[in-house]
Amino acid sequence: MSFILCIETGTSTCSVSLGQKGRVIDVEESHDPENSHAKNTTVFIDSILKRQSLRVKDLGAVCVSKGPGSYTGLRIGVSVAKGICYGSGIPLLAVGSLQAMAHGAMEMIKDGKQQSIPSMLCPMIDARRMEVYSQLFSANAEALTGVEAKVLDANSFSDYLTENKILFFGNGSEKAKEVITLPNALFLDGFNPSARFMIHLAEKLYNQNKFEDVAYFEPFYLKNFVATVAKNKVLGQK
Image (cartoon, rainbow, N blue to C red):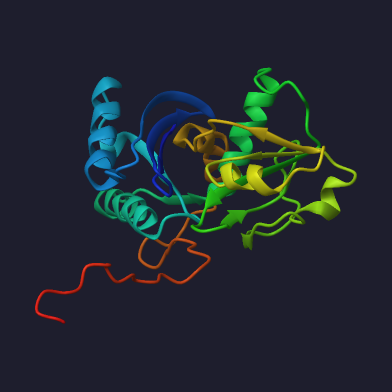
């Protein structure tokens, strides 16, 4: 059966995993706040392939986390995935970052790592200030809403929280915890995205032949990239 290499670089996590038949074979990852993804991604891929005595041509496909998330991080992951696919003639797959996170949380709940069982899952990726990228899922990780960039306040998700226990997780949930105080709001601390959460989704896409166009595929940024100006003035300006 074909091996699928999965790449997650959309947050401070840089993660690479290898799967086969929907099962995780190997994982390399770092949760480095310095975001050294450009250096780590290819090193992790090389380490996994060497440990498993595989070559790139032995892969059936490469799957990349498509976003939303960090603009630079997503570009790195997609560029590496495209390079491998184009150079080796293997197909490209793409999984939504929030969807993969929802599957990761669902696995943790099944493993008993979350004591209070929620009826909804809400992965959150920090989008700076009080804004997050978020999406609501059922307890079985089925999408209930679309992906959105949401500015958090005390009323966020209140319509859902009146009748549903919602589990918030991901680095964006840290600021959600500060403002969302309704009793049905649950929080899973210390959750990190991982390429291992992509394996099942990637296998499903592969079996359905849902491949991306290697030449034209772009990450799902959700928001336009905005360049910031350094606080220190450019040399020579007054």
